[in-house]
Amino acid sequence: MSALTDLCNEIAGCRQCDLAKQRNRVVPGEGAEDATIAFIGEAPGWHEDQQGRPFVGPAGQFLDELLASIGMKRQQVYICNVLKCRPPGNRDPLPMEVKTCQQWLDRQLALIRPRMIVTLGRYSMARFFPGETISKIHGKARREGGIIHYAMYHPAAALHQQALRDTIKADMRRIPALLAETQPQPDAKVAPKPRQLSFL
Image (cartoon, rainbow, N blue to C red):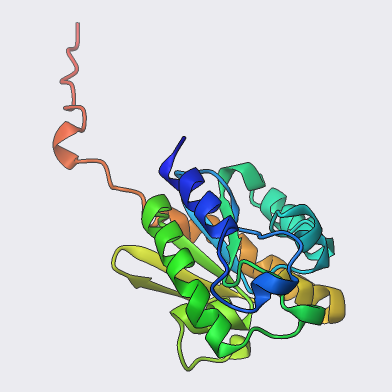
């Protein structure tokens, strides 16, 4: 059993805040343990609470579509949320809940060590882009400690405001180029030496 699986099992038993009393299933997260990209949403919704998996409702279907647009599948990335339990009635996360759950997210990221963290929505954005607003920061990247932090609207926003759909798609399409910037450059010393041509 891997360290990340152990951690997810530990998260599943968490009872550190009142959300534990009302949840159906804990939603730790899922995906590749060595994922290059971690997508972090806000909190589980109704569908996620039923299945114990992140982004499996309508917003998750759009996220799958977005991943496909850059040639990726959810199995290749890691997907989780700031909160691991659904807030009642899908209300916004409370500051105390975000603070309580922060340890889990920190430990997940420490184990996965992604090269890029994509925040989906205001609450995950606030964790990595404090003091910013999503309308100004979306589609922009910051490098910190060797990791690219990249802010996007939550996929659910496109379900409520169709006008945002194209914006979200455009922001997603920037990810491969940003990720390429984090690839280690080949050492110039190992480049093949030019061969001298002989004329016969």
